[in-house]
Structure formats: C-alpha cells, structure tokens
Image (cartoon, rainbow, N blue to C red):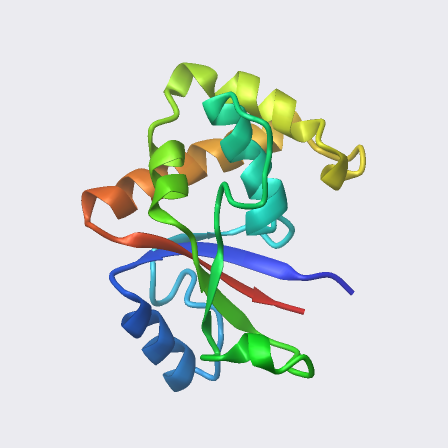
Amino acid sequence: MGVLYDYFRAPSVAEVRRHMDENDASSPVPVTYDGIELKAIDPDVVLGKLVAFAIGQEWSLDLVNERLIWPENGEQDPEFEGPWASRLEDRARDVLADIPADRVSELATRWAAVEEFHGYGDPEFLREVVADFIALAARAREHGESLYCWSCL
C-alpha cells in the first residue's frame, strides 16, 4: 500500500480545513480546487528534489517545508490513518512558478533519475508534471494563494 498525493491551490488554511470537514476529507481536486492528481510524488522528498534542482541546491527537508493543517493536531495521533492536508511553504511555490519553460526538459530528466522513482521515472511524463507544477504555482501566486497537498493511504 502506498500514499496518494494531490496538489492544489487554495485561498487559505481555513478554506482547506472547511473543505476537509464538510466533504469527508475527500480530495478537493478537481471538484473544489484547481490542482493536479499525482498519486506518487510526496512533497518533502520527491517534490523537494525538483525544487532543489530548480535552485541549484542540495536537497534538504526544509525546501518545501510541508506543514500539516488537517486534521488539526493530527501529528499528535499516531493511530490516525488519514487522509491529511498540508500547506507547502510559499517559497517552494515561488521556486516552482519561476522555473523557465526552457528548463522543463532538463529538470524532468534529472528528476526522473532520483532514487525515489526506483528506476521507473519517465522523463516524458515528468516533463508534463513539471509543466503542470509550474502552471499551478504561477496561478496560486497570481491569486495570492498557497499550494497544498492532500494525501491518503
């Protein structure tokens, strides 16, 4: 069993929490919020490596700086089995939004080789994913919104 991930933009933590509370914690993508359904790209490690490549820096856990926002105080309950919603730091949003189109292919190729893809990283598919992240992050920034991640087992 793996963890599934969807990424989306939203106006506030309160809005995301309200969605989670009112919709049985279902993913807000694509019905409620603009986003991408990715299913296998976790924020801190796999997405964090894309962010690291984009800024020419070594990967570290704080590049995306994911913070759990739902359930509130969920980190206190080790028995909770999801789903969860987290907010990504706006710095990561801005790095993604600022990736120039002429770097997409190079970044996707490098990203496809990270060990977390277990040799199955497809550069062609990841070019689309990188382009989708750039577009989503740009729309979020343009509207003064943050990026969020919904995940479940």
